Length: 228
Length: 228
DNA sequence: CAATTAATATGATTTTTGTCATGATATTTG
DNA sequence: CAAATATCATGACAAAAATCATATTAATTG
Image (tube, rainbow over all chains, first blue to last red; front, side, top):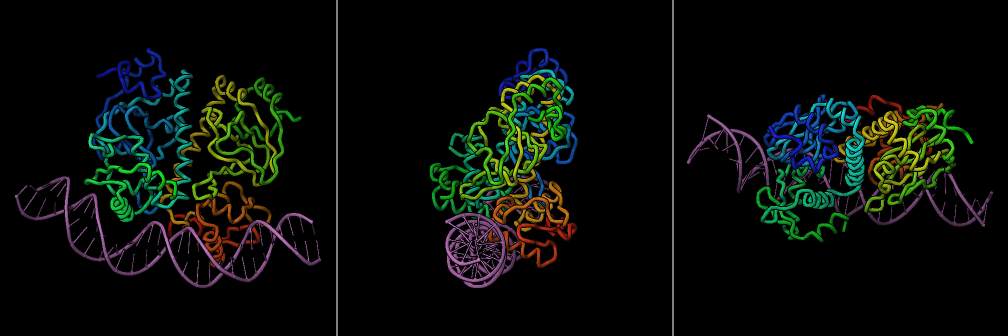
């Protein structure tokens, strides 16, 4: 089993703030897990007895709304920790985590994380920074959802995907989502979403190839996302 | 000047986790301020060199959207701290804070809070708990905004006001907002909001008297807020 | 207290978005 | 590989919500 001390991914997460002995401890009790695309890591309402450190792959954090649609709140990718809020506030999980690509994750037991959080100021500081960031982002998302029309939100979130995940060799977004998932991210009906993608295509703003999407005119998309 | 050690409001905030000597320190450098209804405490983008402890009154946390409307993200009331995220993550302010009632607040300089946050685990724990709570709430709000129709959101947020602020002697919500503010909370146009309030009135769910709103049928409102 | 301004209310209309129906492509699976 | 299933796409329509216009009422101020 690979060791946390030598894990490259660790460098990008809050775990980088841990010292050698803490890392070794965690390394010894952590559990590497492979998660296939589409598999559920945890579900809202559940108890969590640890957090996940993402080595590779991407998952979506979703929440089911009353109308039965799955809203995507956030994506979590390699270098991120998953389940921090739940473990720190000793609460049940508020969001479901579902892999949208095959993933390699390490499960770290709750008490290890809580110990480190209590005893290592640098670590807790890093975790708090991430939480604060999430909170700021969430507040911004609320405004988008409440005030922007769907068309603007679509542009906004496509640009976000571009920024977060980049593009592949051919220039398509490096993350592939179904139309339904994009709709769940933007907060609209799947049919409406499809129509808008077609519309963007016709206007030459994007190009689609199956599930893959290429943003052709970033400038114009930015203007669109701000309501012009 | 009143002392933090004897402040009743403190008991309800994270500051309760401070020990006597810390409280005395803060008491000596804090600054009591009176803020009139409508006055701005701080604005998005600004730097904050401290946090506010709310002794009395209520303020709204808002963010301006591209279309020029003010979205209300959250209310802050007596016993709450204001500006925690900003000071802890050493960031600029993301939301504006505007009094919706006359307020008494105490300003506590940044370095005092940061010191306490560094040195007192109980205090930092409390603050983190609040942040985690805010984050969970924000995620729930995102789903509401993205997925619920305006009518449901209105019911949902009226019930929230009821829960957070209670009612006056006559049974009206103890917090008075303009129609425009309610619209900004629900995330809709003022005219639409007014129409829906009229509609609820006609159906006997609420009663309005100027700005004051009384919820007559809580059960029905709850059902409404869940889409029935 | 009258005059001005701001807030509330309602109607008419347009735009946006959702829903239902149906067909075309993909993808999966026996 | 063919049948079954899921996903994507588009049209037609309905519902929701925004916008514009215009009263009406309430609040502010000279």
